[in-house]
Amino acid sequence: MKIRSDLGALLCIALAAPAATLAQDITPVSVTASSTFYTYAGQHLIDDSGLSGGLHDSDYRHMWMADTNDVTPWLVFDLGRTCSLTGARIWQYNYYNRAPRGVNGLSILLSNDGSSWTPATTATLAAASPPNPEAAQDVALTGTARYVRFEVTSNHGDPEYTGLSE
Image (tube, rainbow, N blue to C red; front, top):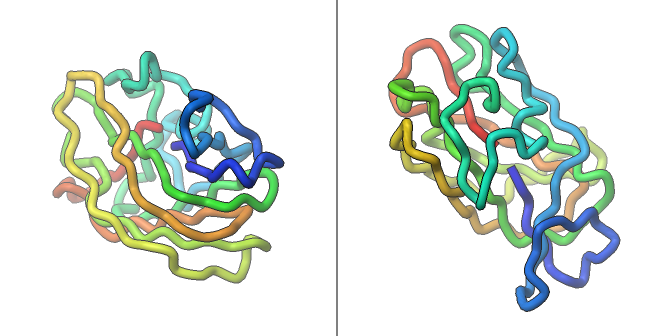
C-alpha cells in the first residue's frame, strides 16, 4: 500500500514518483493489523515484496491475510510523520483461486496521534483476477495525517479470510 501526497509535503518519505507528477508515493514506516494468519504478515503490505513494474504477483508469501474468521479486520499504517494526503494505492489480494478473500468494502480514517480518528472516505475495491499480476487500485483521499486506518467492511465472499497484497 502506498499513500499519495502532494508536493507540498516534501518532509514525508517520498518514493517512486516521476518528476513531472504533482504527487509522490509515501511508503508507510510500519503497519499494525487486527490479526494475522500464519506468515501472511502486515509487513508485506509496505515492503514492496511481490511488486514489479507496478504489478503485484500472486505469491501468497508477499501478502497479508487476517486470521481465521476475522473477515472485517483493520490495519493502521504509520507514515512516520504528518503528511498532506491525496490518495491511496492498494493492491488486491491475488493468490490463485482465492480472489473472494480480497477486500471489497473499506473505510479509511485519518489521525495525527493514532488514537483519535476522522473518517476520510469509503471505497469499494474490485476483485483480483488471479493468477495474473495485479495493478494497484487508486482511492481518492484528502486530508492531513500521520496515521491511516483501513477498516474492512466486507470481502468478496470468503466466509473465513480477508487479505490484501500491498
